[in-house]
Image (cartoon, rainbow, N blue to C red):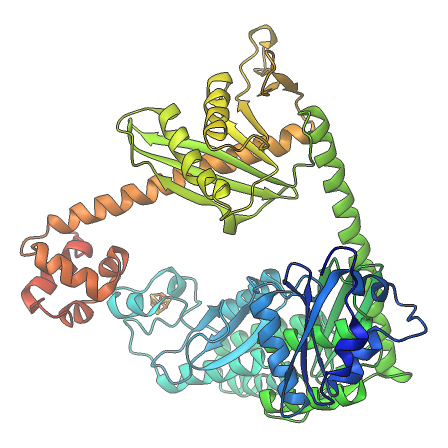
Amino acid sequence: MTSEELFDAQARIKTLPNEPGCYLMRDRRGRIVYIGKAKDLKARVRTYFQPGGDPRPFVRWLPRVLSEIETIVTANEKDAFILENTLIKEHKPRYNVQLKDDKNFLSLRIDPDEAWPRVRVQRKKNEGKGRKFGPYHSAHSLRQTLKVLNKHFQLRTCPDHVLANRTRPCLQYQIKRCPAPCVLDIDPEEYAEDVRRTILFLEGRGDELVDTLREKMLAASEDLHFELAARYRDQIEAIEKALQRQQTVADGDVERDAFGYYREADRLTIQVLFVRRGRLEGARAFSFADQEFPDDEILSSFLNLYYNAGNTIPKEILLPFAIDDDEAQGFEELLGELAGHRVHIQTPQRGARRALVETAIQNAHHSFQEEHSREERTLDLLEKLQYRLKLSTLPRRIEGYDISNFQGRQIVGSRVVFVDAQPSKSDYRHYKIRTRDGQDDFGSMREVLLRRFRRVADGDDDAPDLVVVDGGKGQLGQALAVMEDLGLHDIQVVALAKSRVDKSGFDDHEVTRSAERVFLPGRKNPVLLKQNSAERFLLERLRDEAHDFAIGFHKSLRRKQSLRSSLNEIPGVGPATKRDLLRHFGSLKKIKAASLQELQEVSGVGPATATQIHSFFHPAPTQDP
Ligand code: SF4
């Protein structure tokens, strides 16, 4: 198809099946740009190309960008939902909403079957055994819950290996936050009672818990167990406080999620409000850009991704507008299976449910505006930086490089990345310098840049908008030479030199510093960035991040090396035992944390060697005479 030819949608539609399934739209470069699902594939795809002109904006550009529409038929709508979810995650099409891998997936887990259960923070969906609570909508709300639990429910907080190896209770016992099952002979039934209460609290059954505790408090004070009665009183107060924070929006046991939706052109925010046991428990907003498809499709696709990402499925889901009836039915079925209970999807028009949806819409609007003004501020900052550094493009992706060494040895390089002026930590990289011995910052920087930008030159990686190297003219020249050698003439590079103490600025109270200097290619004098300017703050943050990241790597290398050499110092541990230990535990850190029993389980490690290793890492506390 030439650039002049349009995709012949009508011809393609004729060949599509009237079956349920998924359709995949490909652009002219063969990339999948959109994935949708439908009960009737032919009917759904036809809606995009209605003769007579569909007024929706995206319809106009479809014939220009598409080269093909593929379909995959499924047995029913429910299977289409499952397939859509898998395909979107796999292909990440440009025009679908994407739920990024939820790095914020935080929930709490407690396994009542272990000897002395404790509450653990869980960051992955399918981790470990036991009861799970959450996910929590923010680290802050999770921390608050943990604080109440730790203070009032008195379960141990230490990890298993600490529990197994303690010889004395820790501080938690001293401050009356743990009965110390690690060493003291405590009543398992009492501990189990605390576990049950913790679970009731985490289930949101605070009212029930308060009633039980009140009875216990009265009984304890009648029996003259005043300390115990005071403990129950504190627990009641803490629970009531936690309950007060949550506004009551429905009766009794109601569990529902209400969705709000706000859109301006191709940008939108979806807000979800969580109601648990009749109380508004929390809220979360998701913002998306570059969305061209209709609202009902976006919302339906979002719901599919959202609930498949491990979020709790309530009994009622309230939507701001209807999605296709048949789709809603298939989706209810799918969610019901996932949740193990019936799920109703509704679009309320009046009453308390509609009021909740309206609140969600208002919140979506508010989040949208916040996000927008943040983006405008970022854009403003990047434009200033572009102007000051005379860059040809907006520096949306900036890479910062630094070299660090320890007493001239163990040279390491670091790369940090800022996208839209924010650190993108998953793109950070360390480089162990291979070709240089001794202190050679220039040569080391050359090696790091060559290793990184060879991938760009080979087409395996995208180029950043700006590269910032730490240093002055020399470092800039070195970086430019690397780009030249690789044939990458368009990459913009600058060098950031540290500010200097301004001798003329000494006064009695403080030392003033010169402006931050940025060296640009082809310019003799550096650009000076003034103190407190936003551009300077951004570049300083980038440099500090690169520096800290390199130092952090250094420290971990040195720690590993000293641990490795400490293993060599243990009598009876030769190279073969060392290898067996590493194979068994996977890391030196885990060997150090292993209990005596765990060490004895390693093949090739006898009881005597296990004792040697264990007492090397856990020397017995010295006794006072
Ligand atoms: S007192 Fe013992 S059981 Fe409790 S947290 Fe401390 S080490 Fe763990």
